[in-house]
Length: 395
Picture (tube, one colour):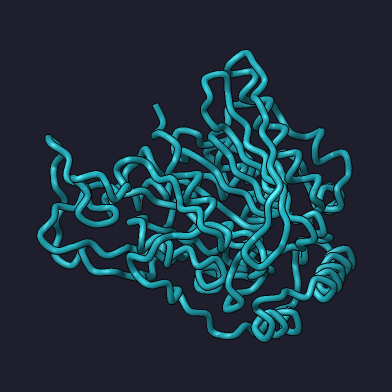
């Protein structure tokens, strides 16, 4: 991936689409030749040291897609709301304050977590809080990296921490181990990692709950997002733990149940009918999906299959099929997309699908300081946070 990464860093404003497709094609060919050790895998032993924070000016308006639209936040985050003193610091009558020495500083923490005999390293971003104001529970996003990536790389590529700083959101980055998967992929294609209470879903959900308790996170506003294999695992977590994760963001991922072994994983990645046929109608949190229609590593039909499953789940839960509203648009750098918003009978948004035209296997709108990013595309990080924070807490 080094050649592509260098191109992205040199030409951050104009991702070379042909170069990305060639690199992705080589990755899939290596995966097909190399077997289980290279599902989603690419050899990328050297990645430039990423930065964990963006240069976004604190307090600056959060802009969507490089245009002039601003995030439509819940009332508690709106500037016009008088009880807000700082992003994420809200005084509510009758709510016990949380004020621990040192808890107000912006922090980037290394940690380790063990559950059911498994241990994961993680990075945790805690936004700053203004002095003299009681700290109350804040939202949290769990970010699941793709293959060959780690927490620092994923944070640098998505720039999620910079947005989280402005909005007062905690961000958690678990890291897959090479012992569990030689390419550091989450094992979304193995049955033991597709169920509640077992394998990777169990430790990831337990980690989210542990961080929620330790760092005074609002348990009703915990979200999960992921890229590629991380996106596939995010979908699994949303289905297995809708009581833990209030909404899900999936970028270039695959639907839960689309594979049960290596061969079916490769088939699903190529866009076989197995990907859509394996989805099951079951309860799902609100879901936002991004997928490039020029992705040759994970075919775009997988993004469509995830959305179809979300639509079916809403229909079964409400008795009516969600209404779809579609609009064409483009990023500030000109890359086109089609955005479809699905709403239930009460007018509530239950799902969004962003089909990114001409985009490959990369985080849309990301920074060239991280791997697998497409700086020219719509800002997926901002749109995911907008989607997450616009939904009422569970229950």
